[in-house]
Image (cartoon, rainbow, N blue to C red):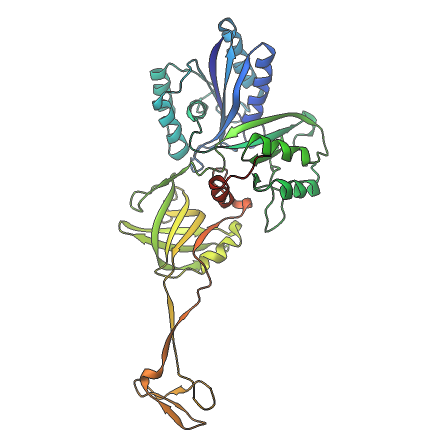
Length: 433
């Protein structure tokens, strides 16, 4: 037996299909010829700010153990399945398949994978790397998918990982409204959260496990372990037939796309973590979006909380000049606008005090005394009592925002963004199901 890594990407389009479904079908076919899946297949979300990203922006990879003599047949099954299922008639769908026949993932492939999640990579770079490590690449049309296919093989998920259980619809139901019992999803969330997450949007009650596209997926449940997502799956009542189920190991909800940066270094297509001080009061612009500006020792940059982030904007509105914050988010290429970090999360690190001068109270009637003018003291006209200028007090007002982290709701969350509940949960894991 020998081990073979297989990576697939860019098989979907806005019209349908899903790379995870292609992977699930391929895995089933390979099992039928005697291959054995090694561990869980991987679902790797790529740079969410990439201008060439696909609809789901994910690639998949898995490893199989197989007889050496069966490898040509296995490769043919993979390529023919991609040819059959990929949305090749859509101009922007350019699949890629990679085969890699080694036991270890080399360091340069791991580094490449990280770059694909955090930056922009060209097809030429992928082809050069494949040649250096001995990977076999297959391009359909332009073949941009070889970038994600290589990245999925190279991502070992050593730092953090989550799991997603995905159920797929039978072909005749695809493109029709999905049928899942909403009450069962709410019950599932109650019984499995936070071992599963982003099942519902707490602000609206909206179900978040079902996509809104014509792809083959009925629903996907994300969680901390295979056991957690499998338990959750048993609690959901399906109101339509399921064709197949697959559990993927994934980088979703891990913040793998983020990198720490100074403002002067942050550039388009990056997702960054930046510390700075608020230097421009938050303002609401057309559409309900909230914009403010921060500064560090290297420069200034705008930050935006867009309308779909709902209550998150209310936190942003309460910031004032001088507050120290840590912002998390992506930067898009918009030459007509200033560089802007599209916020995913916000940490309020330090709040500047808001002070107010209060006139003294009359010692007889208790009412606030009136100022008699600059440096002239205070008086109560009713009681005819006077007080010196120094009798006024400077009081510190309570801010309407607290220190801590704040996040956008699930409806506005990117696949890779780590929910705050995972920060707590990963640090203090609970007993497994």
